Structures are given as structure tokens and as C-alpha cells.
Amino acid sequence: MNELISLTARELSEKLQSQEISSVEATQAYLNRIEETDGRVHAYLKVLNEKALDSAREADNRLANGDNTSPLLGIPVAVKDLLCMKGVETTCGSKILENFIAPYDATAVRLLKEAGAVIMGKLNMDEFAMGSSTEHSAYGPTRNPWNLETIPGGSSGGSAAAVAARSCAMSLGSDTGGSIRQPASCCGVVGMKPTYGRVSRYGLIAFASSLDQIGPFTHTVYDCAMMLNAVSGHDPLDSTSVEEAVPDYTENLDAGVKGLRIGIPKEYFIEGMDPEVEEAIRDAIQVLEGLGAEILEISLPNTEYALPVYHIIAPAEASSNLARYDGVRFGRRARAKTSEFGSLHGMYAGSRDEGFGEEVKRRIMLGTYALSSGYYDAYYTKAQRVRTLICREYREAFRSVDVILSATTPTPAFRFGERMNDPISMYLSDILTIPCNLVGLPGISQPCGFTSSKLPIGLQVVGKPWGEQAVLRAAMAYEGSTYHHLAIPPL
Image (cartoon, rainbow, N blue to C red; front, top):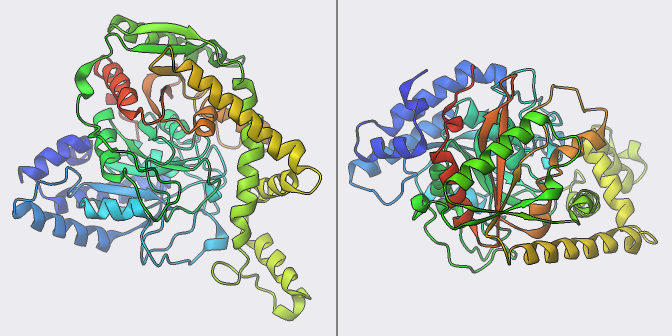
């Protein structure tokens, strides 16, 4: 493996700033890695070879002129294919957006460009971010670099797999019910969902607008903090973006956890949890306790309702958001002649039937039903009320603890096809991550061990609203006392 791609983003940044290496050299090393491995992993939907090298040359010019304003200057990154990038095809993993060229940059993409990051390409995902395995992409599945017969998680499977396979230094994904943290766990990397409203969603192709949030995938906690610094902040173009001061997340990361109160929800050691996952999490608790953290058992009894609440609210919002894809202004239009449809609505239905995959259709139908006359109060309104109860429960829990710790997923990555015909089993992959989205809390997943079959296990740390610093601090302390993050897939 080329030495450059084995470096963390922090190490790479230091070598770029000292001009020990050039961004062109680093970018070419990653392009070579993509060519070498992505035929097997399929993390990328589009590789921007020439654009990336042009950006790298521009970064080298800035570095040569003494520009040290951004630690991401010259760093090769990649973005999930639901973030618009001007002049580049943005498909959201769906045939209905095939050949859609974004006319503008998403705010997160613009901020990466302004920071001088080199964007290598667009990454594979479950169609419209609906899935937990990246098997629902219209352009084929992504494979887990640790075992190519297993899923990389989803929906940001391409973003996690690209970092794990060392085909980019960092990446951006999105998290609606665990879609950053769950694939980070499956692929043995660090993945963070910030507080809802911390990172602008402008230019993010929406799945569920009250749940979606953009966040980073990296090799280390420090790298995660670096990337979070670059993309955080208020954006007037996003009505849900919050005017909350953004601290420097890389400061005081080494403060340790002495005196930090860590809550362990007894409900999170669920029935059916893989014994090796439970053992790894209990070992992690002991490590943090040994570092001086105060471990407290807490109770979050409404956790059991989070999954059904999510699977009413998210499809309902998806039904509304995806109504715009009708084959008229943009996106795919059904191939039949207009006269064959019999009506305008027939053309809409034909375009949507051709363009959407089975999982997307399933969720649109579920959401439309939940919002329909006669069922709105019975399902959607009731789900929102229970969501409020879950929010209150977490608010109460955070009166006695600073962060909450659990497994990220109850099992390691499963084999391809294992859950494709069992949607309920697939949805259970997110049972430990969904509450974080319903409440809008920040959460991180980091490597905390491996199963006997060499599959990664993830540790989840969840914080208070705007409590990213405490989450990163706890994650950094654990990372600094273990070696799981140093492991490299056999790919």
C-alpha cells in the first residue's frame, strides 16, 4: 500500500503544510488506489479524475504561497451522491435522477471547496438514502472492504467503504436513522452525526427533512473534528440551520474523561444482540471507567417505541419530499409516448414506476398511507406525540449524565441478500441509532473491536444538543487507549 494513503488526514495535512509532499502526489495516490480496489468495492459512482487533479494543483499553489488557513487544504475527500455538486451528475442512487447535473453546490460541498479540499468523486448509497446495507442502490451494491461478501452498512455505505478501503482520506455522508454511524460501525471507521441544525442541509437531496443531517467519515476522532470544523455553521439558505456558535472541535480533545458522567441505558443491551458485540461494548465501558469516567446505569424505557415511530415519520416525510419527482422539470420520464399514458397523471405514475426502486416505493406507500385522510391522527400525529415523549426522556437523562454510550448496531455486518426479503429484520439494524435522529442529538460511532470472523464492531457515544465536544472528547479518550482504529482491511 502506498505510504500516502496510509496516513491519517491530520498527518497528511502536516506533510502538505510543510511541503514535504504535494497535493497532486496525494491525489494521484488515491486515484491509483481507486483504480486498484474500486472494481471490487464499488464505493464510487463517479470518479472526478481531472477535476480532482486541477483542485490539487490549485491547493499546491496556495500551499506554496504560505497558505496555512485550512487543515483540509489539499486533502482528498469524497461525498455521498445526494449532495449536489455543480456541473456533476447527482443521482441519489436512483434511476429517476439518472443524468441529472446539479446546477449548484450544496453548502457542505461549497465549504469543503473553500477549505481547499480535493473532491475525488461521488459515492454510492441506498437509493434516496433508504436502506441499511447499500444493496438498494440502482447502480449496484457497495461491498465491505473487511469482507467482500458482507454489506458495508447503509445508506452511506459508499462513504464508509471508501474511507475503510483507503480510497479517500475523508468523506461526507448523511444520517437519517443511523446512516452514518451504522456503516461506520460495519466498516470499522469513525462516523459522526452532528446535532440537527449544526450542518446546513441546503443542497442535500431530502429523504426526511426533520431527521436528515450531514456528517463526516474519517479514520480517527481528530480527523472527524477537523472535518466537522469545516462544514459546521449557520446557513441562511437552510431554514433549519441554527445560529449557534461553532467552537473549534479540535481544541481540548485530549482533556480526557476524568469526571465525565457516562450513561449506560439498560434498554440498549437488547434481546438478540450478538454476544461478541455485547462483550466488546462492556470492555469499552471498563476502559472508560479505568480512565476516570463515572459510569451510571440509566433507563430510557420509551426506546422500544423509537423504531415504529421512525418508520411512520420518515416514510411520511419521504412521501412528501419525493412527490416532486414526476418526470417533468428534471429527472427521468417514462419512455412511452405521452398519448399512451392516457393522462398527465398516467405519465407521472409511469415515470415514478420506472424510476423508483422497490424499497423507495415501499416507503412512499407507507408514508402516503400514514398521511391519508382518516389515518393521519391514528398514525402520524400519534407518532409525533411519542417522539415528544422520547425527547423529554433524553432531556431528563442528560440531567444526570454528560454522554450516553451503547453499541452502534446489535450485530456486525451481515452477508449480502441475508435480509433483502425481510424488511423488518433490515430495519432492526438501526434500532440503536434511530433515537439520536428523533431527538436531534449528536452521536459518533468508532471502532471498538472485532468479531471472531474479523468483522468490525462499533461503539456509539451520544451527547446533548450542541454537545459535540463532549462526544468527541469521550471518543478521543477511548481511541487513545485502544488500537482498533489502526487496523487495516485485508483488501
